[in-house]
Length: 118
Image 1 (cartoon, rainbow, N blue to C red):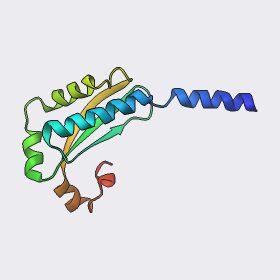
Image 2 (cartoon, helix red, strand yellow):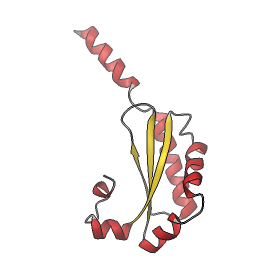
Image 3 (cartoon, helix red, strand yellow):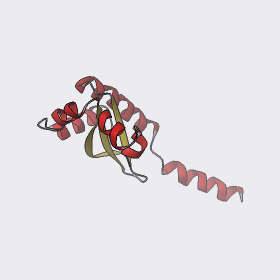
Image 4 (spheres, rainbow, N blue to C red):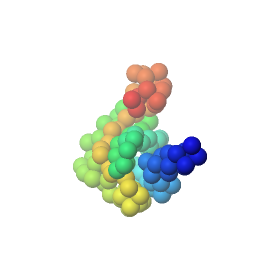
């Protein structure tokens, strides 16, 4: 029984993102916030390796959201920031982004980013 439990624990640890993965996301979030004066950066990640990552960039207003979303090469620039902060080296794969505003989340999701991200 103990042997089986040990195998199970080993298998689980191989199916979890590494600390380097989480560190890369945290570091990239700070860089993204600073670069575009964002109110928040959120991530949706997959449940199996390779760890697919979708990025949500949060602005204060709908107007700011619309301006940022129209920015040429935004998706490429976000991917570059993630790469620069080590996402690829940590086993992550960037899959895309959404730009959302606090105004919309308050209006359409009762202020809950939890529901907006679903």
